[in-house]
Each structure stands twice: as C-alpha cells, then as structure tokens.
Length: 222
Length: 222
Image (tube, rainbow over all chains, first blue to last red; front, top):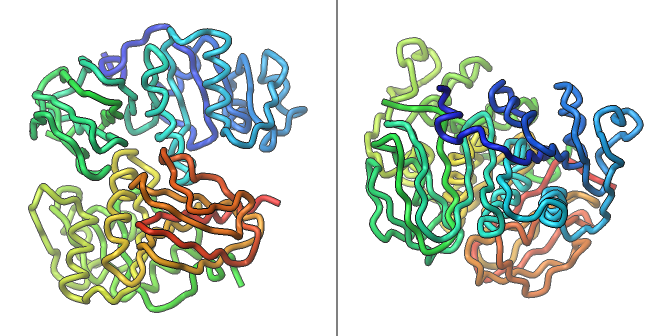
C-alpha cells in the first residue's frame, strides 16, 4: 500500500481543484481524477485540461479563464458568481453545501504552492470549514493538510513521519501521545509552535477542544 | 524601473536562503546574490550551488546536506547547531542578531512554496521577527511578504496591485486608505479576511497597533 493510501483511504469523495501549484505526484493526480463530482475553481481548468481531466463543474468569477478554449473540459455550463467578497474556493465549497449537502468527504487540490497570500488564505478557509463537512482535506505533492473539528480523531501515520499541528485559535488545547514530543493539553501561542513533530506509531490519536489543521508529510525521516 | 525595485528598493541587505522553492525570477535571484553576507539554511546550499551562488555562511543541523560536495559553495566553515527546538531559519536569524546586530535589512528567499508546514511555520516566524530588525521580508517569484511592527509605514505599491494583510493576533487593528476596500481601524477575525485587497495609488500608508504581514503581489490586475 502506498503512503498516500495508508494516510487517507481511497473512499468516495468530491474533488475541488484550485488554481495554485498543480500536483506532479501521479497518485495525487489520480485521487483528483477519482472525485465525484470534480469541481474546478475558475482558472484551474487550464491546468486540468493539460492533464486531460474533465471537470463536472467550473465555478468562479470567470476572470482567469478562456471559456471557448476550455469548453471540452467542463461537462456542465460554467457557473459564474461575481461576488468579490468570496474567493473561488469559497464559491466551490458553498456550491457543494447547497447541491450535495455536508455529509461529504472533500479533497482539495492545488490550493497552495504559488502565491503566498492565496496559500495562507486557503489554509485559513480550510480551518473554517472543519466543522461543516464530514471530512475536508488538501492534498499536495508534499502531504495532507486536514481540518479537524473539536473532538477525538484517529489518523493513520507512519513511524518517523513529520506531523505538524496548526491552531488558528491560540486557546485551542490539543493532546496526542504517539509523537516524538507528546502533547498534553497543549496550546500553541504561535502558529509555528506545533510544527515538525514526528509520529512514533502507525496511527495517532488526537484530542482537541477546537479546530486543528494537521499536516502529515509524505516525506519520512528515520 | 522594475516592479521589484519599485516595491522594495535595492539597499544593502543580508540574504538568507531557506530550503523551500528556489526562485526562478532572475531579478529575485539577483537580489539574493547581492546580499552581504549571504546565509544558507542547511540544504539550501544544494539549490544555490546549481545557480553558482556561494554562501558566506551555512547554518543548520546538517541533516540535509552533502558537505564534501558543497564545500566550494561556502566561504566559511559550516556552522552546525543541533538544537531541535528551532528550525534552520531561526538559527540563521539568531546568527545575524548575534554577529551583525539588529539594525539590518534582511531578505529571506525560498522560505515558502514546497511543504505547507514549512511555509506556514516560516511565515509565522517572520511575524515574530517584525519588531527585532530594521526590515525583514521574504521575496519569492510571486511577491514580497514583509513583516511590519506596530506603527505607521509607507510602502510602495502599483495601482491595481493585489495586496493582502495578515494579522496573527486578531486584536490587531489596521488602517490603510489607498485601497479598493479601504481599512479603518479594522481587525481581521480570520487569517483570510485581509486578503486580496488592491492598491489605488503608488504607495500605501499603513497604520497598525500590532505586527502585520503585508503581501504585495508582483501580479497586477487592472
């Protein structure tokens, strides 16, 4: 079994492709292709078309897209939403909530890696959606960023794997034992204080009283 | 004058090269090369050597480096610091404070763009150093992320340029008029709430009562 399949089992999910760095890892791309439906954020269609991926829906303000050129890569008419108060990722997420409900697993691709403000903004959004859907995570060439709501969670890991925890609310306390530096009711006073821990088991049990973003790297150090 | 030179004048600075996505923009690379001194975070030497850049110092825990292969690309002996509580960027910053003092302009390269946990951690660190040095900023192919302490700041901009503000402390209030969506004593309740504003003048005047990270994109939309 590949590390990706171990970390995040290949269950039915909805794929969203944003307009950041398109993955090169073939297994990550395959996971994008397996989404049902596949939703493209606006200009993401450009990158998807180069990989022969056809989106079920494309959503956005239409400002980064040559629609004529890309019409063969969208199954349904383009959904234009001009609201400038929300970005294209938010528009895609809202579309899912309205049309598919919230009992969904959502995987988001190409949401990071290019412009730093898009990366930070998208990760901040991910945290805000943690309580809304059954599962919501970003996949990149580098690992899995997963938004977890308050509660207890069991996540698969690999011994030696670097794991980072991000709490946007500094009051959030998390506990997790299966780590090189175990956490006990720990709150992080800065966003970097929970980074670069390391798993000591094939799964970790995480408990928190608030939303947490967990990053599990594909890179494993022994 | 190029947009980079307009946004951030080419004054004497110290360059730090981290181990993230190495820039491809030749002007950004030239700015890295112009640093005095140039400090490499550990494995950053690999990417620098491919561009023929010789570091004055290389600092880190030595775990991502083939020193024999790279000895022609460091002027001074490698500075190994095994402290696992700080990452290589922190080690480089501390080295500058100790050896050059804090009245310095520091430009950091390749600090974002690959692993999301490194990106987030490095940007969080940038904010923490905002009050320590005369100037501290990250340059990438996509723009300038600059850490500003509480107070008033005049930053160069381009009309139509996308500008994003990030406050890690939600109580921080910022004001800035020269924007498509002007800010008046505004505090952002989430990290994405200050993103994707747009400059309406060739400079912006920013006032805040806490540290702010400002991102000025090279991409300009009209």
